[in-house]
Amino acid sequence: MANSSFLPSRPKIIFATVLLIFAALVAGLTILLPSTGSKTSGTALIGGPFTMINQKGETVTDQTYAGKYTLLFFGFTFCKDVCPTELQVMTAAFAQLGADADKIVPLFVSVDPDRDTPAVMASYVSSFDKRLQGLTGSPEQVAAMAKAYHVFYKKIPNPDDPKDYEMDHSSILYLMGPDGKFLKYFAYSTDAKGLADSLQMVLH
Ligand code: NI
Image (tube, rainbow, N blue to C red; front, top):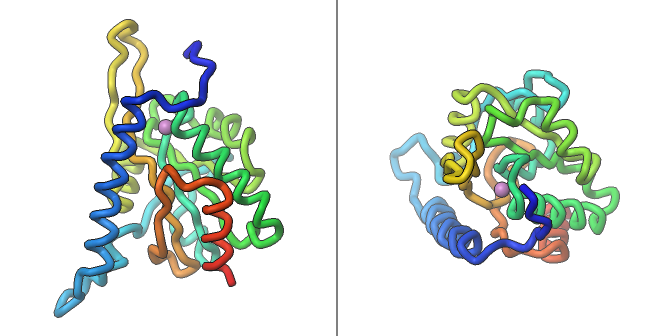
């Protein structure tokens, strides 16, 4: 926890790259899959109903955000590099968007509900864009939402401290439309300007 650097370590970069390739494959398949005779349309494969608790302790569902774009990132507040880096990119992109950013609700979704209580989430999200909301819930609620968004996460015990652990997790940003349907994803490598430009194109 004494790590003062936000720079991703090499294993983290390799891990993030592998996930990125996987997400690209999933997204590619999603777009290419024909919906012949199936009730599941391609884009329905990412996202769906969820019930979680926001940073104010209120129950929220996918319907809470109906009519707004949502930009989702799954992670955990104890994350030393990937999460704070991505949320800083998001915050900078929202600053570039100006008033247009009000059309989007950014959501930071915890994959570490044991430590990420609503109070912890409230303190954490306050360091980033003022629109950022933090979602957590029971382990079952978190698992269900992560599954709906095809997000991988796994607890990695700290060999030096049995009470401590890291969470490996997918590092993809998902943009969902006002109808709750998947629109596009952004790789971890997307910079603030690239993200803002892309979001602007969707909004106009
Ligand atoms: Ni993280």
